[in-house]
Structure formats: C-alpha cells, structure tokens
Length: 405
Image 1: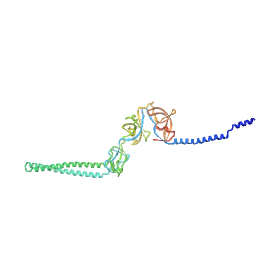
Image 2 (image 1 turned 180 degrees about the horizontal axis):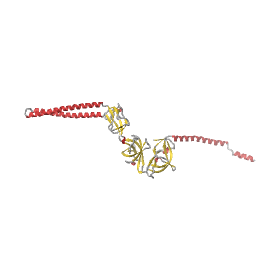
Image 3 (image 1 turned 45 degrees about the vertical axis):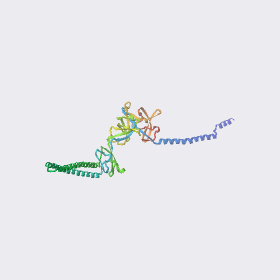
Image 4 (image 1 turned 180 degrees about the vertical axis):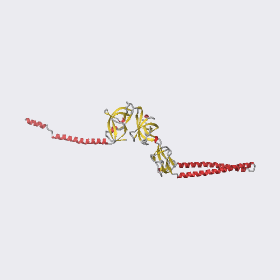
C-alpha cells in the first residue's frame, strides 16, 4: 500500500503533455518575434551610424593672455579695392595682346593693340586739311598786307585830290574783306587742328595701357576678336581685354547680420583664417563698416584690412574671420585652449565635444574651464589645431561619417 501511494504521488508531479506543448509554442513565438526585431534594430543602427551628415566645424584655437575673446565669427571673401577690367575706348580689331595671366604690369604699360589702319587714314586726312587751311592763311596774310598798302596809297592820293572817294572806299572794302576772310580761315585752322587732335586720339586709343600697377588675373579677348566699349556686335564682340588687380589693395569683405553689427567697430582686431590655409592665423583689423544695410539679407557689409599682406593671399579666396573683444582673456598667464560654446555638450556631469577627423567624428570627453562670452576654456582632452563640430550635435554619434561645410 505504501508503494502504491508513492507511485501515485510521483505520477502527480509529471507535466501534462498538453501543457508542455503550450509552453513550447509560447517560446517559439517569442523567438519568432525577437529575432526579426533584433535584425531590424541592428540594421537601423548600422544605417543610422553609416549615414553621412553635413556639419560645420571650427578649429580649436590657443589664446595668449591679454588677447581679446572672439565676440563674433563670420565668413567672406578676399577682395581687392582696386580691380579693373581694361577695355578699349573705341571699337576695333585686336591685333596684338602683350600680357598673360599672372604677369606683373606697371602703370602705363602697353597691354594690347588694335588695328590702327582706319585711325591712321583719318589722321592723315585731318592733317592734310590742316595743312591746306594753314597755307590759305599765309596767302590771305599776304593779300591783307597788299590791301593795306593800297589803302594807304589811296588815302594819300585822295588827300592830293588825285583820286576819287570811290577808289578810297574800294580800297577800304578790299582790306575789310581780306581781314574777314583771314579771320574765318584762322577759325577753320583751329577746327582743323581739333580734328587732327581727335584723329590722333583715335589712333592713340588703339593702344591699350594699364591704368595702374598690378597683376593680370584674366585675359578676356584674343587676337582677331572685335572689342567695343558698348558691345556693338552683341555676343560676338568683347567689351573687355584683360583684368588687372592691385595686389596691394587686397582686403576682406564679409556680410554681418545686422543683429550683431553693434559688436563691431572700426579699428577692431580681427583674426582671419583662409580656407586654403586653416592653420594660418592672419592678423587684421576692421577698416570700415559700409553705412547701409541689405534689406533682403538683413546684413551690413564690413571691410577688413590685413595688417600685413602675403603672396599666399589671393583675390576671391574664401576666408573666415573672428572679431575680437577689447577686453583681455582672464587667466593665470598660461595660454588657454578655447572652443566655441556651441561645440560643448554637458551630459551627466560630463562634458563632451565631437572632434572632426577625416570623414568621421569622435565623441571625446574634455575638462571644461571658464565660460566667457561665446567661448569655453578647455583644460584637457583636446589640443589646439583640432577641429570640433559646432552645430547639429544632437544628430551625431561617436564614429559617424560626416562632411564638413
């Protein structure tokens, strides 16, 4: 009896086969749902991390004690104050061009020549008219002298009552007529001389000269083409021959949002960085603020002069500028590493920045110091010269591919 009781107890502990099948089905359903979900999550993570995001970057700078803080950043272009597209004053055929791109020219140097055949013919004709008018003056002067002697003789004869008053009047009339003809001919000589000067000017206009010293940056016409100051031939006629830039007049031109223009004054210190040389900090200063605003862009144009020009600075280069404050950067006298405030992320009592390198970003922990204006002092974790992302940080992940603007 005892043995049968134990067997019944053991049999009661066995799992019902129907229940065992139900539990297996539940596990199978969980696995069926979990595996695709995991695949989707992995694919989404790979796709999200692998997509390329456009970002803006800034170079980490080192500020020495006493140097002003950056109060505003802007971008613009290198532009010359003195640039000229040299054109002909007359319509003509280009027969010679004496310059090439990159050539240094002096003020008054001959750049090109136009066909001067027509101008030469007009000058010769004007000179011939001038010579004829001049010779006619000589004849009239001789005639005037004869008429003057005839009048004196007639007056003497009239006093002696040898001739009549009519002959005296004729002598006076002849003298007056010759004097009038001489006056008119002298006016014609002056007009002929003016026509000679005009023809000579037309001939001189066939020689194109440099208006100032500079460098030729483009050749806009070729030998055999027609040039005209008014483009008389439509698209087949050039208006310019060459473009010259005075490299000593290079400066920076930037558009500053009118909301921040109060932070800029004439003479203010500026640090400029060419896009072509991102590690080269160029000292500059604000030369002038153009006293008008662009109502469409809501900007004010600011012109910045370089403290010292360099041959690496070329017209139309892209450039970034940092306007400095007048107050010195506070500190212990040790150079400080500074990053823009917009590049710093505070997360769980830790500070991070996204460092741009190659085509990816690295989320790096840094130790932040003082925050002054739009800059943050970094005590450790990053070095001057590296680049940090300054916008769109919420869309970035460590190791994500990016492209810098």
